[in-house]
Image (tube, rainbow, N blue to C red; front, side, top):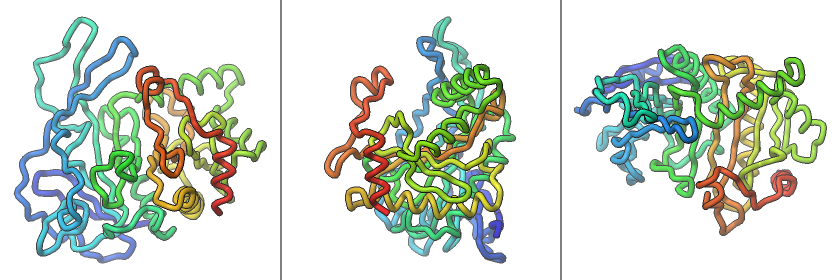
Length: 363
């Protein structure tokens, strides 16, 4: 069942959307009773000519909420003792504009247009939203039922459609950070959506590789060919169903990294069929269970949806989820040290085939 969307504006003018699994919830009837200051203006983008990349400077984010106690969690439903970001007393899935956004459409005039002849400056136009998967503070994505995963996917698809149509958006990126080891600042189960004003570096590199492959093969889709090769090799495949395959990339950067990809080229979440949306949840929940089973404790991870860009090169995209962890052993983390942080050259401590075998054994 497609979730029922309703919306309100928070007291500072930010949007909040409820995605309800049952009709007539009445959640949009609860007003935000707080008195909040206006949202911050857009961040500043500065161009780095040495690597042809744009860097966001968002100083207001340095004061964002950091690991509050559970009775002051801004993602829990509002109650008689604490008014949170979500005014309703309960919710299924809720999405709202980030109070501390990296990118925003709230542009204010800026007299600075460059810092040097080689470093132009422009507003960080875009959008940042927070996606709350459940009102249960002590839950996790892996504990959700498949029906709730479907609601989350539908909500992300809806937000992708709407945000992609906003002026200046180059790519819509939904993701989840889980675990203090990753750097989360709120324990409540949630993800985020970043709408970038420029194509981010990893996507730019993937587009260059995909364009080169298409040219060399007469129009072949690179990710489709990579997926087909992994399905044939089988050695790195973790699990699959009728519509999705989960596998460890042959050149995985991270100790434990899995891609979940649909069996046909889909550009973004809105392009998934009902059957594909239904089939995603059981497979993903299975993979998350395997992650947590590796070392007998919750696995810190980043879960990142790679979607097609909005503009040039969109036809080369292939929707897939990249799930990875920085944990390389029960008591060891992989830190991005000299080679990774300074040079962007990854050195993986775990052989991908061994990682795949370890994950398969956790069934």
